[in-house]
Length: 162
Image 1: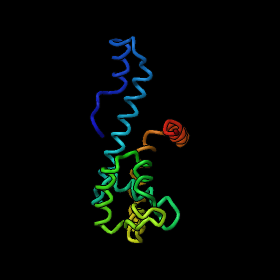
Image 2: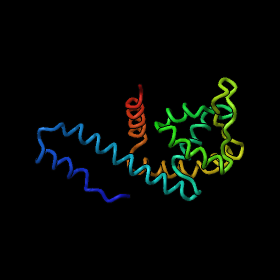
Image 3: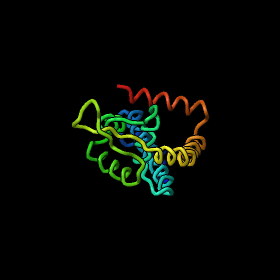
Image 4: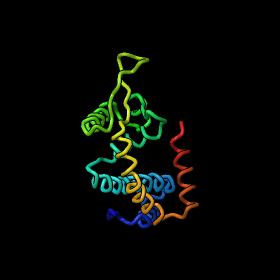
């Protein structure tokens, strides 16, 4: 875990030293950012055990969540993952070199490709994901009740809706 200045003290300092800001909004933003950073670091450490980045994992999990043959256009991937096409391309090249994905011709648009999870990619993600999910479970269940996790998921989903 990262050694941050205690968040409780941050809230107190805001009230004492900067009372004219909306402390609730400031704390929501800080807490969301810190929680995300802490979670992402844990996921990177876990993925590194498999010579894999968290971003590579996100791409493969998203592809795997679609029905067979587990494929999406690069623009759908970059929009869903909220990354630039250039950032996505670097990860796709890595995944392609590991034989976890292929880029097939798009029958609807000959100028573009469709990213598809290979059988090796499916086997890899299905074999490794339980370990990654266990780390995720430990992160959340060590701090939240089942009901709190459901509420958090619901609230985060609400924040991300268009």
